[in-house]
Length: 204
Image (cartoon, rainbow, N blue to C red; front, top):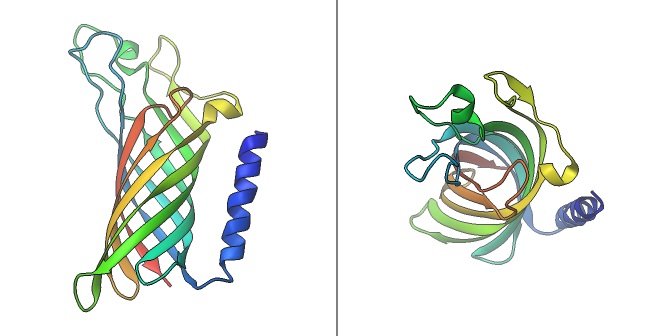
């Protein structure tokens, strides 16, 4: 908990101080698909599916020159990890034992490079780390088909990962982005779950 608090203070301090630098605020949102990248315990011939979700957020893009920028962001997302199986041999719980859905608070910091591809359009590519803490979640109660609230410590809810982004900008305000994110820590609620997302960003 103390580590997360220190990191949060550091990011927020950088975020606040960056307002004095040249930059612009933005808001964004979109939909996502998530997949638990684990092999089901019942056999290598099975695989999990994909679950739908969404996200909203905002950030402040700090200009670092003609092409480069750095964008601290704060976002909230709903994630369904898609970990369900279709099997006639197994019962409901066996097919959904690793399924969960979570509400997550994320702090991505994305370094981006952009270049013009037309008079009023540009391409932007970015990558960076993110911190993530789950606020709430649900799974299936052991041996049943009944959903129950997830419970756990701060460590169970926390993860850190990497995010990549590609976007088409239509100047001066709109951009259409595609993102990929993956957590590094292999334990806890948000483990080994890759998330693909697409959305729109509006820059003020």
